[in-house]
Length: 301
Ligand SMILES: NC(=O)c1ccc[n+]([C@@H]2O[C@H](COP(=O)([O-])OP(=O)(O)OC[C@H]3O[C@@H](n4cnc5c(N)ncnc54)[C@H](OP(=O)(O)O)[C@@H]3O)[C@@H](O)[C@H]2O)c1
Figure (tube, rainbow, N blue to C red):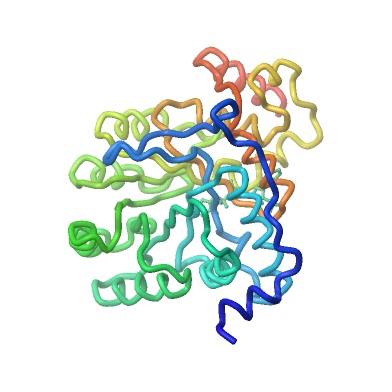
C-alpha cells in the first residue's frame, strides 16, 4: 500500500466541516504587494503546537485542526526546520487531503552556509510532501547574506514564488530594517500584538513604503495575552466589531493595521482554530476603535 493511502486509511472520520464562505459572506483578504495575489489574512503557525511525537493520534488530531483551517478559508501555513517534528507532522497531515484546497506553503532556512541551506530547504520539501514552496524565509536572519543569493536564484528560476526574512520578540529590528531597505524581498515577518506595538514605529510604515508584505508572528504573544486577561469578559462594544471572543479581539487589532498582510496564530485545539479563523469575518476596527481596544486591554491588566 502506498504511504499516502496507508496514512489516509488510518485517519478516523475524515469529513470536512462546512462553513459558508460566499460572495455574501466573504473573508478578509489582503494583497501581496509584489504580485497582486490576494491571500486570507489569517494563516497558521506551527511552532510548539505541531512539534509533537509522530503518533497516529497526534497526526489525526492535527489533521482535524487543518481541516477546520482550510474549511474556514485558511491558506498560509508557516513552519521551520527549527520547530522539531512540526514539518514532518505537517507533511503527514497534508497527505490526508486529496488536494489541500488552498495551501500557501511557507517555511524557512535556518542554518549557516550555502550548501547546508540548500540541503535543508530540499529536506523541508520532502517533509511537507510538496514540489515547491510558495514562500521561503531566512529564519531570524541567520546567515542571511549567504541565503539571500540562493533565494534570489530560486525565485528567478521558479523554484519558489516569494522570498522573505524573519525575526521575532522585537529582536534585531535594526538589522531587519537594513535588509528591508537594501534587498528585494516579498515578505517580512516579525512580532506585533496588542501588548507589543514597537513595530508600529518603523517596521510597519517601512514595509508599506517599500511594498513588502507583512506576516505577523506571536499575535497572542505566545498565549500570554490570554493569561493576562484571565477570565475577564469581553466588552459589549466588541460585538460591533464582530469580535465574539478575546482571540478575535486580539487578531482584529492586528489586522486593522493597514500594513499587515497575514497574522499566523498557532493552536493545538480545533475550537481555538475556529475562534481564530472567525477573525476573517465581519467588521475591522477603525483607527479610533483600535486605540479604544488597546486602552481597554491595558486598563484590564
Ligand atoms: N522568528 C520566527 O520566524 C518566529 C518566531 C516566533 C513565531 N513564529 C511563527 O509564528 C507563529 C505564532 O507564534 P507563536 O506560536 O509563538 O504564538 P501565538 O500564536 O501568539 O500563541 C500561541 C498560543 O496561543 C494559544 N491560543 C491560540 N489560539 C487560542 C485561542 N483562540 N484561545 C486561547 N488560546 C489560544 C495556543 O494554545 P492552544 O494550543 O491551547 O490553542 C498557544 O499556546 C509560530 O507558531 C511560528 O510559526 C516565527
